[in-house]
Image (cartoon, rainbow over all chains, first blue to last red; front, side, top):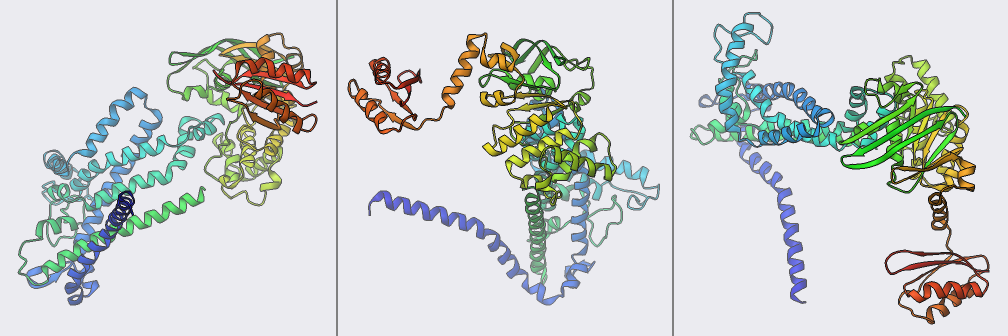
Length: 306
Length: 329
């Protein structure tokens, strides 16, 4: 066997090994998290953990309900802001904007996507939080459910968290949606326009329909980013323990913040370490479930349209 | 002959490149007009000016007038959606919308405000029948259009275009992506439709133009070389360029039965090989030979002709190679 063949075999094996390793990584992390959270899972029942509302590690109470709810709330509200904003901006840029306009705006959006989360967090503290506090002062008195605020709101709240998150993920949604819309073949537009459709009818009925799986993928990527986002949310969301938010002006305590703020501290408390690792496992599981469901939807949609 | 589309001094530019130069011609009503010419001569550009789909191209500019029913299409203050509704477009590659067969045909009527389910059902059936597709799809109207074969998709596009009740049908090389049987199908539909519609077809297939056209416009490098009734243009072209185009197309389309490559051979060997190859062929068959020896270009045809064979063409293919086409007698 000559050197050349040997190199070929080694290279082949090496590539295979690295591919397997990256694939395995997700299982390794899941396995480690699971093995470390077994102790809490065996000590407490699942309903106690997921539906328990008190979190008092020193007294052995580990209720994740408020954290899970906080994560879902803040992410969902962020998506409510970011999806229309991102999708509509992408439609404008891809379908209406003139080339010169496009070439100026797109690099800016790409830059937005590259700003570190901590900077968004600071921006949130400086601008969004005071703004939310002002809004709370006005709308809190109107008595609309979900928009109530006590006599005083600091502004560090679910709303502030989701606005910051929305600002963070909308560049991702725009740039992916833009690429998706641009990749819609011009024949689709021509087909619709040549039948006498207006531009908006063409976009609404033909272009978006063709691009739907890709647009969904853009939203899902934004969602995954939002769901696991830690530092920016942590800086503006208020972080109040043992508090189930009933209004957008209430403070929330999402799962990633729980892990980031507490892991490594007070590890002498029994089961504390295990509980936080379970929190990480839950976070990972939820993101995996969402991604897989989304994939399934995408595959279904792809199949329906050939 | 009544004119339906009147094109007056139309110029089109892509950035700095002028794609159409002072086009002035009348397109007759309820006839098939073929726009012929080599690739890149501006045929498709001219077609795209009719329904102003050229607006979608960045950096494209058009000047002049295109009058359809007393309306200037190129005037930007008119309602272009109305003009486009009057002109069905049959594209080069079938472009079904990502929806069911039914929804594809109903797409046009729906965007123009027809909501009545019964009326839509009737229209879908009517236009699928006119396009000659109804029998093949009537049991699966709800299945995605992308599941159809390419030929069926093209007839679906025809039905979809007809469903908005246009007066004009624009076809941009409508059979170039289709197999021969599907092409024939489309051509037959077009011939049936010409009693009710003005049809403009862009094609680089001269045989297709001959089969279909009543009127012919020959474009070359963005200019009109010749236009007139099809039988006159094809049988007796006034312009040398039209004659060359028609003849050239015939030769390049001709079925060659045998080909021999004589590159690298010098006289008299290429002469001998050519003779042998012709000898092996049955009578009436056609042989193409490729030579690169300058003497052979003149001597081989001469010799073969002396043997009684018919020389169909001698053409330079590139810097070094010539192609000689001979019919065995």
